[in-house]
Structure formats: C-alpha cells, structure tokens
Length: 235
Image (spheres, rainbow, N blue to C red):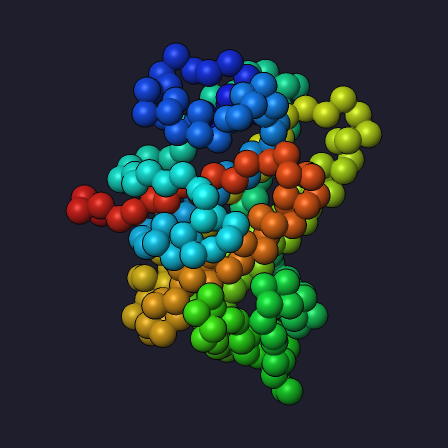
C-alpha cells in the first residue's frame, strides 16, 4: 500500500482487504496521490485507536488491528533513484534545556528547568481531556521516553529541510520511516507507572503536532501511517 501512495505499481501480494483500505485514502481522486508517506512503527501499543477518534487530525483515519509478533514492516520500492527514504530513527546523543523547552512548546506544554543540573527539569504536558501530566527528566525511564519523542520531532524537522532541498530538483517520492519504542520501554519499567498510564496519550499529542507540521510543509500532500505493534502471547 505504501508503494502505491508513492505512485508506484501495487505489489502482487496486495490483499483485497488492504486494497479496500487503500481506496478509502485515494478516493475521490485516485490519480492525485501524495508521493510522500510518514510511516511510524510503534511497539507494544494498545488503545491508540479509541483515544485518537476524539482527535481532529485522526478522527477520520482508517484503523485495522494487527498482531504481527516480531515481524517488521516490509516495504517494496523500485530503484533507489525513484524514491527518497529518510530515517526517523536517529536518537539524540546531546540536547539542551532550550531544545526541551521548544519541544514542550510545540506540543502545547511547558518546561521548568532544574536550577542546578542541566536537562533535569520537569515537562508539563496537557492531555486531550484537559488534565496535565508531569514528566521528570531526573527519572531515567521518563527521560528515555522524552528523548524518544524529542528525537522524533527533531528528525521530522530534518525531513522537512530535506523536502525543501528536493523541491529545487526533480522531486522523487519521499518515504519518512521510523520506529518508536518509548511505549515498550515504559511498560517494561514498573518505576514509571504514572507516566506509563498516559504514555499513549502523550505520544498522540506529540504525533498530532509533528504530523501537523509535516502536513503544512508538504502542503497536505503527505499521508501518515501508524503501524501499531501489539504484544502477543508468544512474547
């Protein structure tokens, strides 16, 4: 399905169910395809669909449950010169209080830096129901979760810069792809129960802003796909 959105021929393995889902995206004009796809695989996530239905950006999305185990998303593309593939997986090794503050502002929250130690403050993030969640950079697991979201946002900004550069040449199809493990990390650490409870909501808040900025940069000519990897009994 991804290859078709990028204006390539459909693979022979495309199922009738997937074809039907794809038609929902392409209609009313199947010939006016976006040529850009944001594909994010999120591990160990449940409940995103029910939360996202109240979100204006995702309310008209098409959902389908998948229990894939440890399999990865398999995307078949033609020659390297026909598509530009950008990875969203680069993790930040160094970041500042300013960058954390800018990220918190992006998602509608705020950041209170620690008066003594750098990048050790508290993020306050609003949820859709009007409540607020505090995320402490001083706690290892919560810090890892924030770094994952911050890295995703920074990589999306770099992808936008690349998109603008490609516009000056013969623009190829663009695939932005990555994997987010933050929810999985929270679930595996009992010490982060409070934030784990709202982890999916925090991810949705972040994705709403990140994909919104991509839509603006691509002038609406980009499709977002969130591949939800759920835990299976075999894990």
